[in-house]
Amino acid sequence: MTPFALDEPRTLREAAGLLDPGDASVRPIAGGTALMLMMKAGVFRPSRLVSLNRVEDRHRRIELAPDGALHIGALVPLAALERSVEVRRATPVIVEALRTLSNVRVRNVATVGGHLAHADPHMDLPPVLMALGARVSVIGPSGERAIAVEELYVGYYDTVLAPNELIAALIVPPQGTRRAAYLKCTARSADDWPALGVAVSLDGDSPRVAVCAATEKPMRLPAVESVLRGVIDDAASRRAGEAAAETAEIVADARGTVPYKRQLLRVTVERAVRAASFRRAR
Image 1: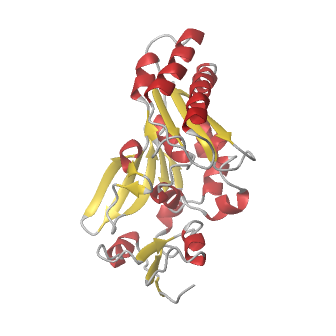
Image 2: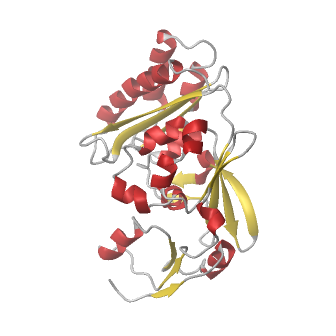
């Protein structure tokens, strides 16, 4: 790796102020699970890294609000999210998705904010969080703003975040009677990058369905959601799978061709809808 400067600010706002929107070689680093690999491979050569390891402890907390909303600091490691009693109580589907998200070594280091900001379309959590209606709180030199997770991604490895903005927290709203499931299909081991990920959350007339890995970015599938309004039975599940296969813009990668992923999407959406519908409401 080439030499680089390292800043260690004490607040997240200070860290955002150290990022240079005109210099792409200046980056923040927390867990560094993706960034360090890029540096070792020579794909990214930073001039300066802004470490987030000494910022306020509040960004490492998981709190369950009285109304049932989850407030998760951006620097919470994925492993802590997986083990959290509060997360399991409020949104068990997140814990289930984390069990096969990469491996325990990565989950011990990778952070919630870094996972979401990295914008790899194969990430497991974004579709789950979209299905749950989650949002992120973002901080920058000009202040704070909230962004729905479904609006965070604009393309391949691309988000709406400005170069000098940082994710401060993830907020998952109260789920009420929603029933959610996440199904992941891999070409190799269970903790491999997915060839397809499908998240479904059902609650009467407001179903939410999101997908990753088979599309250019994690996204909701409105055509599928329209099929699922009302009574959910086997016929509705099948129609949801057909709607997904017919309307989603599939992209090929090393884990599958477009025809293969389209068929995978058809089957997995149907199975995910059934898995969610069979769950007991909280």
